[in-house]
Length: 426
Image 1 (cartoon, rainbow, N blue to C red):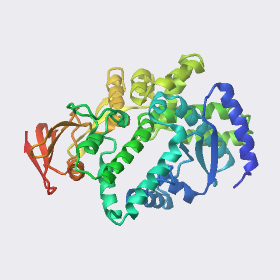
Image 2: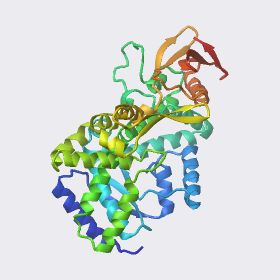
Image 3: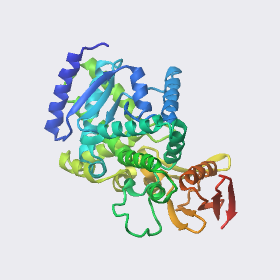
Image 4: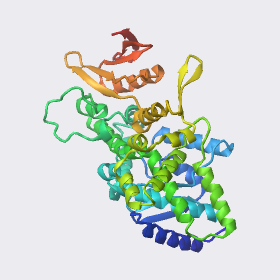
C-alpha cells in the first residue's frame, strides 16, 4: 500500500464533509480494506460472506479468479452493501487516489440506497445482514439434517434459483392466502410455494429465495441510475478536494476508465453518468431536482424520460437483431431512429431482460400446471426454457405446460412427470 489508514480516514472525513454540504443523505458508512482474494470471494457471494452455501457461488468464484489470473478481467474497485450501516469493501492494493475516488463513489451509492423509492419500499436496510445470516443458518440446518441432506437441499435450491426473478412485482408476497386464487397469477415462485407438492422445509427454501430476490431486484432495476449517480458524485466531490496536480491527473485517468464508452456492449456507468450530467446542466445545477429524480425513477423510466437525441447520438446507441448466423443493425440513433433505440433499451433494462412467465391455469384433476410466456417479440431460448421447465416440474410435482411463440407460431412446450420435454403446436 502506498498510503496509511490515517490518510484514508482523513480523506474520508473531507469527502463526507463535501457530501453533506452538497446535500447527500446516507446511512452511517463503514469501510473495510481487504485483499484481492477477499474481493473475489465477496464478489462471488454478491457481497455477502455469510450467504448460504450453493455450488453456483463456488463456480462463480472459480470463474472470477481464473479471468483475473489471466488478465482477462479486472476486479471491482469496491463493493457496496445496501445495509444500515452501509458496508463497503476497498481493495488494499489500490492506490491512494483510487481509494479516494472509490470512497466518494460509495457515498453516492449509499445516498441512492437510502432514498430511491424501490429500495425504501422493498428492502429493510437495517435488517439486511441479519437476514442473510438467518437464511444461511436455516439452509445449513437442512443440510445437516440426516433426513434431508445436502443433495436434496441442492436440488430444491437449483430449481428455485432457475426462476428466482419470476415472482411478479418485486417478489411481493400475497398477504391473504384465504382468498381464492385468481388467474393469471404473476408470482410463479409464490404459486409453487402455495400449491406445489412440497414439504415444509422445501417451502421454507423457496421463501428464502423469494426474500433474497426481493432484496436484489431494486439493484437490478436501477443499475444504470445507481452507477451513474455514484459516478456523477464521485467526480464532483473529488474535484472539490484540492488534490495535487499529479493526483488530479491520476484521478481523471481512473474516472475516464470507469465512465468510458465500451464498443459492443452497454456500460451502465457511461450512460448513467452522461444522463445525470445532462440533467445537472438542464436544471442549473439544482441538487433538489436531481434528488427528486433519484428518488422516484427506475432505469426504464429514467431512460424513457431523460435519454435525449443528443445523448443517444453521442453514445452511438443502435438496435440490432440476430438473423441466422449474423447480427443485423436495424436502427441507429439518428433523428428518425433514436426514439426507437431509446424505447428498445428501456424495454431491455432491469427485469425487462427476463422473460415474463405467468401462471395461466391449474388443472386439479390431473395436477397439470399451465404457464404462459407473455410474448413481446422476443422468443425464448429453447435450451434454457426446457431445462427451466424441468426445474419447475420438480417443484410442482405434476405435468407442466408452457405456452409461447417459437419461430413465429404459438406452441406448447410440455414437461411430463418423468421430465421428458416435447413441443406441440397450440
